[in-house]
Image 1 (cartoon, helix red, strand yellow):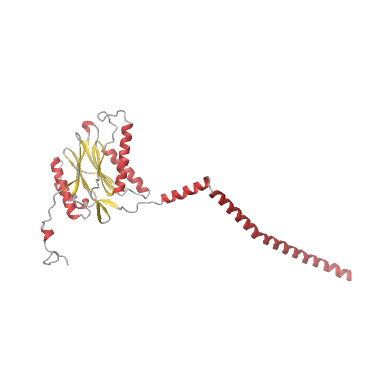
Image 2 (cartoon, helix red, strand yellow):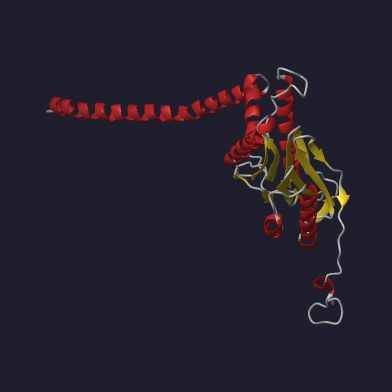
Length: 311
């Protein structure tokens, strides 16, 4: 019986010992995990220090951060702005008018900002909106014109037929504005393109409009900004296809005078520019138009008061 009892208790003691061995091995394994993690973190930290000290990885990281910052830069709203530009076709060509004021918010800051520029010998553009964007557009068009001239077959203006016509410049600007709009970084301008399209005796006057999202149209008279509300009715009433140059100039001056009276972002110092077949592009120096503040609506008492309406 002693032997039988001993043989029966031996398996039980072996099983108990095996369980203890398993618990001990698992305990040793778990105790090694923090050491492994700390070693792995130390290796990663050492690698980061070695990479950040120089080399292509550090440069690529800086480049990526710079590109991300540049990608987030957007013109959210115009800052320094010009107001209306007017355009009209007449019997001998096309004429534009604009004042020379650029406003910084509500402050009339720059009073000699010229917003009519020549692209080439037969194309003229005028722009309202953000003035820096308008300068960028002007530089882009002049760079294209210089490239066309340098790659032309002849360097003489009389023999050179590679200049872009007004309609080609207008279509190019449509693509530029639409492209920038799709990138959510528009050029904040409303542009009028004036000039001639075609070649030789077949060339005809052209007047087109482009806005900041790439919308375009052609017409015999165009106005941007506040002029689309205040000047278009006057142009619509007095326009004729056979207007002479003097009549077209007087009509544009009348419209600019009304804008000076009614638009607080306008100025009575203006520029007139024209494009003709014979003379090409001519832009006047800025000059002041005559204004008259003796209108009854300007001087009659306001608020049924005896004074000027002030407190």
